[in-house]
Image (cartoon, rainbow, N blue to C red; front, side):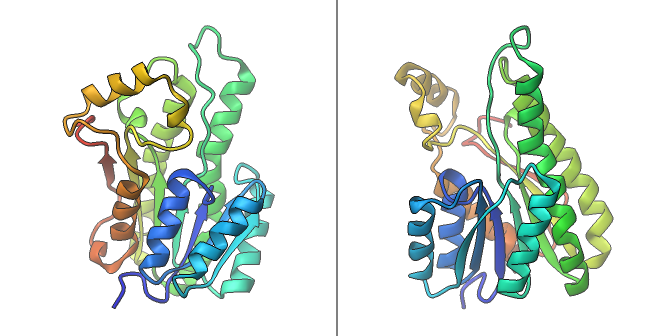
Length: 248
C-alpha cells in the first residue's frame, strides 16, 4: 500500500524546483496531483506526463497564488476536476533580495504577497473542503531564514517567519476537525534558483552545513510525504527544518 494512495494534493508553484520534487514524490506514493503556476507552459505539461506515468491523475492550472480571487477560482476548478482536496502544500515563493536601505516598497510588497498572502489565499479557499471531509493536511513551505533571519533578505525572512505564525494559528483553529497544519523550513537546497549563485557562495554555504552538502529537492519532498500521510497523524503546529543541521 502506497503512503498517499487515493489522496489528492494541491501544490502551488508546483512545476519546478521544490514544488516539482514534491509533486513527483507524491505521485510515486499514489497521490493525484493538482498544481498551480502563473503559466502552464511546455515544461508544466511535460510534468503532467511524468506524473501520469505513476498511474495517478494530474493537471496543471494557471493561477496567481498572490491573488485572492485567482486562488479561489483555481480551487473551484480543481474541486470540479478531482472531487476533493486532501493535502494543500503552500509552496509558491519568490525572492527579491537586497539590503533594507536599498529595498523598494514594491520589492517588499511583492515578496510578502507571493510568499505569505498566498498561504492565506489558498488555505482560506481549501478550508471548507477539509472541514466538510473532517480531515486534511496543510503544509506551508517556510525557510530556515524565517527562523534565523538573513542579511539582505528582510522581506523574504519576514514572509517566511509569517508563515510559521500562520501555521501554528491554523493548527490550533482546525485541530478539532482533524485538520493538521505544519511548516517545513528548508535550508540550502540546490534548485534552478540556487544553481545561479556564484560557486564560492555555494561552497561557503556547504561549509556551514554540518552534513557538509547542499540539500536536494527530494530531501524536502520526503518530509512532505511524511506530513501528508497517516504516519504524521499526531503531528500538527510544528516547524521541521530540512537543512542538514544548518539551523539547530
